[in-house]
Image 1 (cartoon, helix red, strand yellow):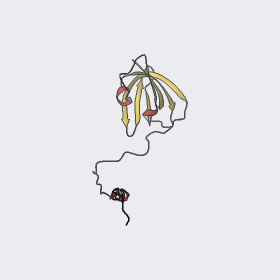
Image 2: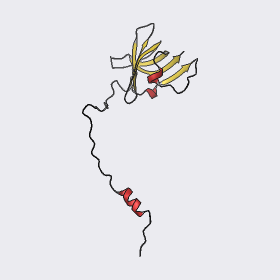
Image 3: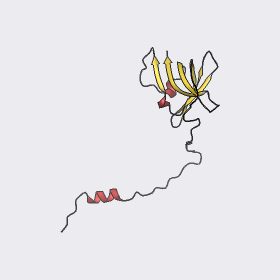
Amino acid sequence: MLKSSPLFPILLLMAAPAVAQQVTTDANVTAPSTQPRHPAKANGPHHAAYGTIRSVTCSYPSVIEFKLVGPARPLKVYNNNFAGIDVRAVNFDPDGPLNPCKDFEGMKADIQYAESSDKSVSGQVFLVELHK
């Protein structure tokens, strides 16, 4: 007579197909857009600017937009993945990890950005040097 392992019933349960669950959604909830608002990669000429970061907004999943207000005209820049921005703290040590969505507002900064084909913004930021 063949004896089965005590784990056999558990293995059978793990191999069983998952039971589908019915999911309902609220009519007021909208899924985030899968299309980025701005071009994924700006390939235009690179520029540098200095000023104060204002009007920082972040959106799903990791899009950041902000204005740089300085001696020249204000610039509106973006990045579809703020984790991809090279962020540097100059002449100060941050208290912990920097959260661009909360910590950039009001900071003096040197930025570098690439011009974008999207004319609603000045370009895609790829370097931010924060100053205190």
